[in-house]
Length: 372
Ligand SMILES: NC(=O)C1=CN([C@@H]2O[C@H](COP(=O)(O)OP(=O)(O)OC[C@H]3O[C@@H](n4cnc5c(N)ncnc54)[C@H](OP(=O)(O)O)[C@@H]3O)[C@@H](O)[C@H]2O)C=CC1
Ligand SMILES: N[C@@H](CC(=O)OP(=O)(O)O)C(=O)O
Image (cartoon, rainbow, N blue to C red):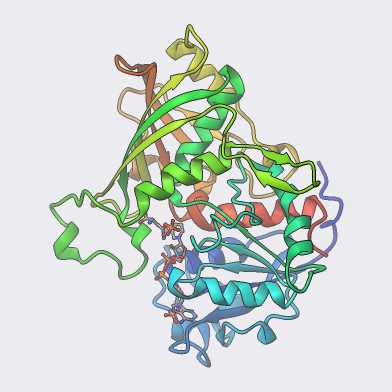
């Protein structure tokens, strides 16, 4: 498979929030990327003006990549990023809204991890292993911007727990038709709260059964991602929020003393009766492939969903780095006595739950001709 419009080409990229948990993962992944080349870094005024290696509290297992060690961190202002064709954002949500909007208005293509624009009716919320078809909204986002844009847009990826669960849910809907209801209980890693994140005295020897705003995000974002796009009589597109087949979702979110990797226990009920057997579900999950892989995105996992047969997997410490954390792991697929089927999902929250999804979305944007 060839990447027609990336072949032989270097694409300059910037990273906003480059010193944070997600920003560091962006830098580690981009340093080895076949065509994205890090050209500019942005963070807060606390970091701006310093060499990256002086500004960052580096928490990755591999050393700071050579290409960024001496790169001077800039303030997050578009003027410092105008040579970039793509800007990745790992900005704190407190500031991401205004900064990302300013970058879009400066005709930059912004791939955001922050929650600020996920509910915007013109902004695609894309989990690249699931709904690459939502790129169709970009033309309308540009056209309706004030002033209209030629190159700029914002595209977001989902909340990290949403990302983990929508991949198997999409695979099940593809194989067996619409889902009717879904109950999810998460066990979320500490790194999901950024750095320094949850105080050690709160999380060591403990579980915190509350993550602000997380349950609402999971219940809402899943519908936007799994829903389609409809076109009205006026020719305007809108996200249909799975409205033709109402899907009821209930999420309960917990913080647990794991460093990386969100685990989720999921039960589903199918609209179609009789429902599939656990073995049919295992086979459908293992057979699911993403458009990102089919289209040749270099960061796409070969196994979108790795299905474990062992009774005690997936586990975060053992399974979070499989395929560099770019796919999801599912195990314990079995009958549910209340709904139909239950299983366990593991997704690496800082890889496919964050930076890897943004990079895959940018690769899809290149392949689909949205980066010019
Ligand atoms: N961690 C995770 O698993 C996931 C996180 N996300 C989202 O990604 C985003 C980043 O999260 P995370 O990396 O964990 O957060 P961190 O707190 O680790 O990093 C935040 C980054 O934002 C920068 N920043 C803070 N204030 C400003 C400002 N006023 N102007 C410019 N830059 C600023 C910081 O720079 P400085 O160092 O200079 O302060 C830092 O680079 C958030 O929106 C988060 O919700 C999404 C999915 C998963
Ligand atoms: N809230 C998530 C991480 C995150 O930042 O999510 P969001 O991008 O939806 O704000 C967690 O704590 O694990």
